[in-house]
Length: 393
Image (cartoon, rainbow, N blue to C red):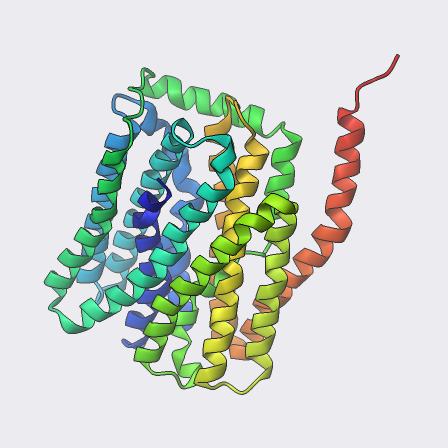
């Protein structure tokens, strides 16, 4: 079931890898690429507001097929519009919105199939299908656009987005929804009010809104010139190599999430990211250093994403009537700093240089870990323990 999330990784991979390489070759600045990335990724933190649509008339499997088709169509239009950045950004944003709703459909269906004992494993494979697929697809997209006429490349990439959805046919169909659209939106409003009263949700929001977000992943593909790396090297590193190290990180995080606090794994991955950016900032800007720093950064991203998904499911807990709204709110919150830091990193790069960008990204993550892990979270834990402690008469 987790591998059916690959279309999500494909669209994200185009944004994080292929887009930067293709636009840099056309002379687009890192700041402009960061802005387009911010806009294109924005549905990851507001698209869930349309999720009540998924509980009307059709099953989640049907909606998954429909939104996968829309994501594929949007990506095709994006590729055809590479010479017009306005249309390019608009089509890519709509494709991202469609894939957000696709992913919501699949993950909303998953609890009917996956048991509680498989949560950490499911988290790992969902993120392999996201991060691993993103790396491979980004490289494939660059190659196809380079070697094929744009209409053929667009068609091939669209078909690749649709292919993993065939896996959904293997699983029992989800139940037919009985709700109405107006009632579903009203219910979501009520659920949101109830969710924001949950203390554990606020703990999750505090963690996920922090800049431990691995935003540089969205810009590495546009930094080849800073490290004297060829387009071929940048494509190979940001594609298959990143897919491999991210997948390894995702898998290694599974046993760690079972043994240690998931929030600690999530936050400490930010220390790894900060170390990688410090490494890139201090050492000579060569292809070898670029490769080592980029791969180390993405290795820790694998830990981060598996811990994020597992922590979301831990916060929600079993048998929670608010599960759908909770996971939507938590997932959206984790994407806000990614888009925001991507925009900030691109702006800093074009105004103050590569090193300033690297230190900004790594310093923000390290500061968040220092403030949250040993200081803020223990205080919140003690407060919640006192608040929830039963009164003894």
